[in-house]
Image (tube, rainbow, N blue to C red; front, top):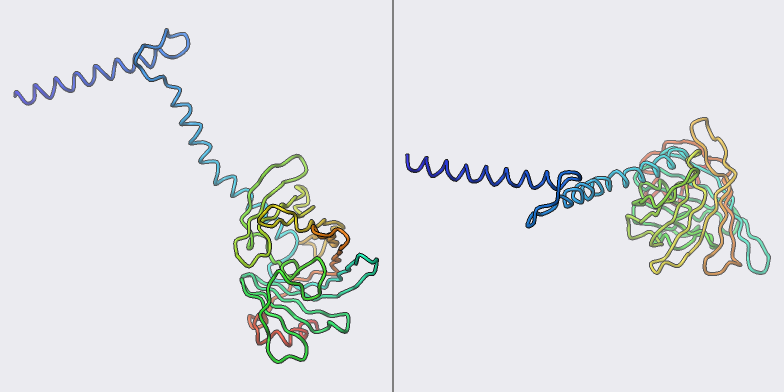
Length: 286
């Protein structure tokens, strides 16, 4: 009985203290009197709520950015597709050089390209599977390793540009800002083989197509900016820019344009994206 009486006294004191604290909190609200000395004001509660809401909003913000990037991918082309492209290189002396390329892409960061013309470059082929890239030169029996930073045909566009599949497979996006017409995203590469440190991408909200893209090195210097234009319906399900124009961030005298002739959905056997198949990749164009 003594123990029960002591317990009841302790509970009673605790309840009385809680009541006093509750009265103090009530008196802190506007119109309820002055705050009692020694009591912690409830301002921390609003701060905690705001912080929690901000923290919870971060995943939604990131998710929105990725959804934007995925919508760009699916607007421009199917997961598995092929295309023919004509690249024009403008040299500082005013001369131009033309290259025709065939490219094939599939899911899982797999892509290849074959040089169709000019004759002196015809048959060169590059394969990308994940972070690995291989080059085949006509007349050579074995493929050799290469990098995405290099270009099989020279010029401002490199192997990474020609072999890019889905943005959403290669980058982690952040939505920086938006207005009535555009989203502006920063893309961070997910893989070390990507030959730039970040990308700034502007997307048109209405068409879900890229407007411009700037690649930066680790120091924040612009490597090149690509402008997208002349969008066209492809097959009723996809729409893509047909012209990509760029200039070197290091030397503006070197300029390149990339005109897409056609993009067709096509499924490929898995053996197409292997080193063994690369020397005969030109057979895909028949």
